[in-house]
Length: 201
Ligand code: IMP
Image 1 (tube, rainbow, N blue to C red):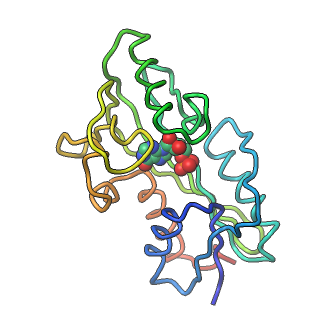
Image 2 (image 1 turned 180 degrees about the vertical axis):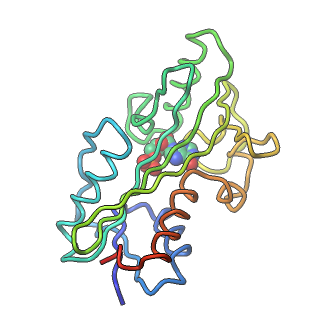
């Protein structure tokens, strides 16, 4: 069976991607715990996803690698926090600080909401070294209030246009998954593998 390594050690992402790829003849494996995460020096999601795919590829002895990078792009803030979403509040991965910084940013320009989008970029590096990228987007609005306790990151501040007025934080994970940027990028990847399984090679 072919192996597909995920360039992440986040168990939530590993579970989600494994479930969605279950019908393919591929074993989905997480990044080994003794591999340190690479420094994400890119200025776009695509650059960072490719940096991660290339980095992890060095450790997997010719297996395929799937890397992703995502972020929230707020129009009134000229696309911030964007590629810097996970450290917008000053501390990498501190969701609470990140949300507080975003609320401050919106207040700072005198608004209590803005149009925004979550974007996800996935980079698949096949065992031959060829890279293919897939993008997923969900449009919506980000508010200075927070509602809901599900999810992570900016979920409690984001209301998708395609929903029923609830924030991502108020949705069950299966509801969010029907429209999320990550599942959309993954759907495109699955479509590409279905059409041409050799992209894993
Ligand atoms: P990552 O590249 O998927 O690790 O995401 C980077 C950052 O973007 C996260 O730390 C979150 O702040 C934000 N983010 C990405 N996807 C989501 C999401 O689905 N909900 C809320 N925040 C997200």
